[in-house]
Image (cartoon, rainbow, N blue to C red; front, side, top):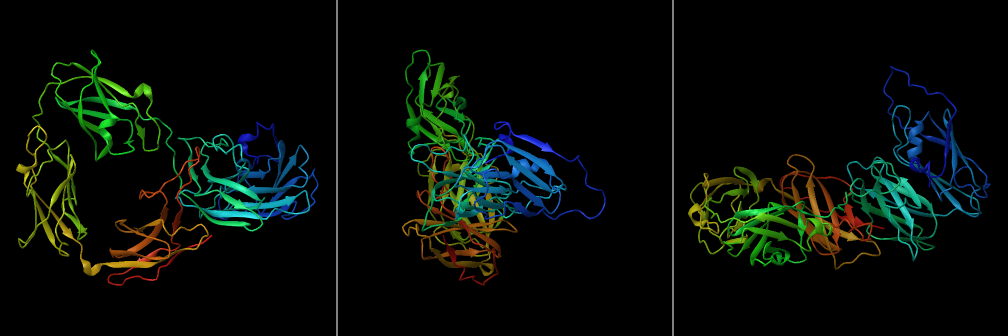
Length: 563
């Protein structure tokens, strides 16, 4: 494969035979993409001379620099001389072509005319120095709002060396079109690993933290029985390769240490207490940690409850083995933080910093729990009737309340709430206390919300059928219906292969159904990793938007997944 960024590596000489010309001013704006009207050799040609040139002829003049970004040849022919003559580009290959090989030549969607109008989709043709053309093909789609120009790299797998897109480009390559779709035809039989790469700096390799990348859900195989692999799906991600670090640590009060990291921290289990150590920097003695918890509104923050240490002045908080959500281990140089202790008692009243559903919100679901999130660690012993829920007629709804963590209290109504009703939430602030015994500071004791009008609701239903050979009926298919207008609501459901799915209690509007196969069972989409290779979970979308009206259930929207 040849690209602009490899011109110097291969000592490529570029000659342009015509002077620079500007497009004439005036007239209608050119919106017509350029076309490749002829190639030499022609596509499908066999027994092509090993000393042949490659020639493109276009419907109009093309931008010369964009050609360098758009040209891909597999296998890589080495040094190439390029000349541009009006509506033609001539490639003269310095060394003879390999015998008995299929050459695949692609012009990607970076190619544009002199008015900066790009190709709608990549153009590919093939010829052979032997008697036949390879017939393998793969195709798919990149699901991204800015997909045009993203590179698709296919690597031939071997037993000894696994591909690393950060070291070299693929053995086959193409660029994604305006609709996100791509095809690589004329592939040889073999096993392949596929990546989608947004080469923002045009360096010819993947640069983590700068470029986005997507990993296929599996390696593919092309052989006599399977010449075409379809419906490969990619979702782009900017991979996090930076190690987390402790940004700061200090005392909130005499028993509470607050530690902040540069990014969110994860754990293999919920025993956060075992993640931390606190020591006296003078005696090197450990301070007992009673409990540690992440703050629910900012997973970079952790609050740590310790024993009393009135005589100790200087402390060190350390996290020997923390990882971020991408699996990067904390940098040892930034895995500790020294700070001064505090003997000041906590005299500040706690506050509610988040209330769900939001005060004065509308169209609230009938089964909504009431959630309070506080700014500090609270006492989580039984607090009785801390919340009361009533409608405007004074009818009260009972229900239990419980602490989800030391910062979050949730109240669950015993029954579904009435439709299209204004509800009052009264908070008994005298029943909420922080660990020091300070009662709640809250200037608003009553909040309101209005439930949804069920007469306006509808639903979407159908059967999900995964007809691929590798389909596994034991796995969960996680579906979401995303409203593409108005309030951008999202509804979620789960089903299995050859089973019914149902989105219910939906507001009218137009929706796009997206889904993935939850292979690891965590309920979240897994993007995978290029190195070490971890396949992504399979992603899919319903091909059309679905419009639903009030009280008119939309059934029969079957989701069919094919090879």
